[in-house]
Length: 232
Image 1 (cartoon, rainbow, N blue to C red):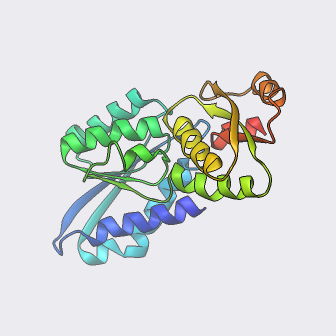
Image 2 (image 1 turned 120 degrees about the vertical axis):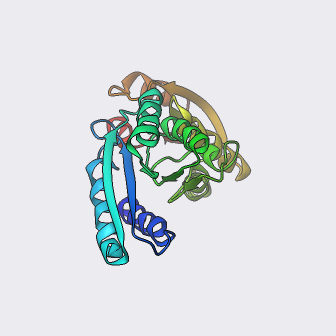
Image 3 (image 1 turned 30 degrees about the vertical axis):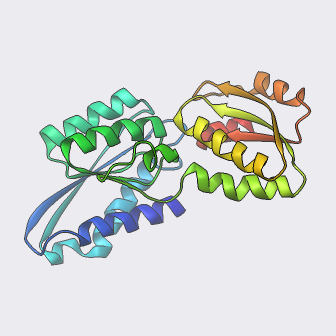
């Protein structure tokens, strides 16, 4: 729900920046519609975008706003192809949402090439605002540094000083592990082991056995959505 509300706020911000002239604005909501992140974004993000347009009363301001959507299936190549099609052929002005950091980074690159706008409210990798920071990317909501500093510090101070990470093997998972490990070690803890888990995953039993045998106090789930549900 928090992501949905923030996505709505972001759409309103884009519309508010539009000149006071009768124009067509086309927004593309690109996310996971059927996989591990469908519950975090999916159709809910599309509904949020439409609600934002209604709340902004775009038609009263001379704006004809169209919302389109597509499923990137958590695959960077599919997300990239959709972004190119939207920008080059379908006249999309801005792409919204885009959970799955590997997809978001790919779409951010294409968006910069086309001089369009990416408002990302779903991905968490800090690369979006660090190594691959671009003037055409707005990284909204949260990132892995924020998640790490909140949870990692509190858990370590509460006595969970030995960590074992189950890490989703893609950009978000590695970023979350890296950021959390820094916080844990800065607060007197240690990382006793890590294992990369194929993304997405359904069976975590073998990885949990590795964590169990490590002597860790804390199993750090560097994942999200359906992967987190399955791991728990």
